[in-house]
Image (cartoon, each protein chain N blue to C red):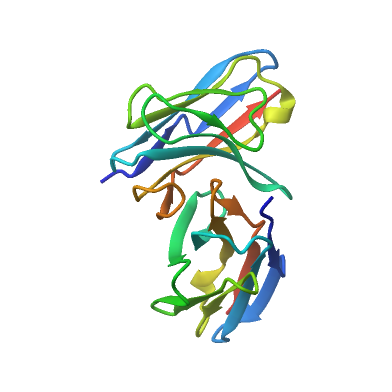
Length: 115
Length: 110
């Protein structure tokens, strides 16, 4: 059981480039989340999804887009990367049939550097 | 808006000591509270999940308590070991997605 898998694990971009982070979970979870973690700022929610075909904005959504075309996958896109988006990105999915009542499982993280 | 605070930000203890990590939250209308462990360069691993109707949860040397009315949770670690060194985060779930504290960085010295 792989759990939550993120790809790529490391990436270096130049300002203005675009990229997509992929999150895949094999636990049949409905809810999936993208967080970013920065020193001194803790974990902040970027976007989340409550099911296939749905997305919603979190605390810091600007500069990011997401898609949930398949239940098991949640993609995070950066259309025009900026140095302020240098961070470690974590994907998570949650058990349970009611939002925010289950146990949260995290991927290993994707470290992104924007030069 | 829910705010979660963890004090202290860092803690260093000698091996074998029992210790308590604190988590406080501003809105008591929560569904659950979850404690995580994060090792350097790694993702978060769930330690304990306490539903709003529960007072505590135990797993091995770990015991987490929840007092909704006072907006507090504690994580008790018994007989600490160097392998317990990590950052411990709490997160609360309510009407909005989980809100995280900034964590307590624990160092257990052999």
